[in-house]
Image: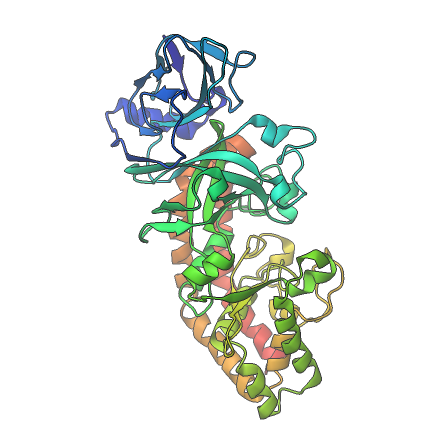
Length: 520
């Protein structure tokens, strides 16, 4: 009998050892309801006796194939066959006393030598609550090949750099699980160069199913998505010499939910790739036409991604830029202190949204804005108004000296040439709207008053610290696993979270001072 544990390097993590202790104490979890989403199976395909999913206790796994066929098996994601893998003739013991993830690919070789299709299976063994588990199963060459591997070559973008993957998600309560075929790409901008990379999943009919339908996010009903981001926390992770917490982006997104700013839903999870622990990630809705229509009610919408970056990436320009250009050209040609000019601009902009979006970016001292990371859209209707979505706040809330608690981000938000020193000089259109609107006394008064209101409520120290504490408690079970993969330690993480709380204590007073100096 073959015995399968989690990959060997998983067993060294104290977090996983604690999980094994829970099992020894008799604390077990329910086997979840399994949902397999895939094309109709072939009659020559290998079948697994256990569906993919979560198992609290050790199991016996058997594989079946047509009579007289040889079953070839791999456990590293590679494609099985006569020249790769092992021939299986006996059951496999899935050992839940060593918590982790085991993945298999199997293929039948018929008596005449014909090879059947590859069958995939994922098994989460003994990992306790509360975080969801995401398992990705794909050919290692798709990641690591010298010329075509997307992890080895992270900078190219587009569908040519998308690879087929089998995805399994197990809910945090371990009650439900889904397996689904998809495509995977590297996600992000500068973070593509980091060892721990963000990923993006695509669900399309060419893979067999065009949507993922699953209760992805806490306190929300079952959600159907076309794309899903796996966010690695970018600069706010232990692989960089910063006071990392893995929390900053999520803290700002949570604060946005109590304002008129828009944000995407997300959920912390543990990621495994081909059975190897990959650390803590956030499952996050990806901003695209589907989300604008289904999440924000914009049946038809135009999306503009960081207008000022057009000089860096002319191919990214879409017709939607023309709508934005008309507005910015009008602002450049008019003094918005004139009420008629101001009214013309206000008719095209959701001012409540813009104000709260801008104030959150300013409060968080986001160094990576506004020259980049701008996600804005408007419904493609005559009266459709521009709105903004909070996105990518890893480089904020005191992460580095450039996003420290004393950073004058209001000044940064009004600087027509601000690029954080890492991008080509912009044409000023990333800040022209707020600069123009603040010429108008009515808007100026409204902007300052809303700042005071938020600093006394949503952004008050006690309110922000409550969000930090809740989110930190949520991901604390993942920190040891994160550190085992990417470095760092729990004590450092706890100290860094306390620095985050200290930012929340000091920032309102400093932000009020900046407003008094610049917008008296």
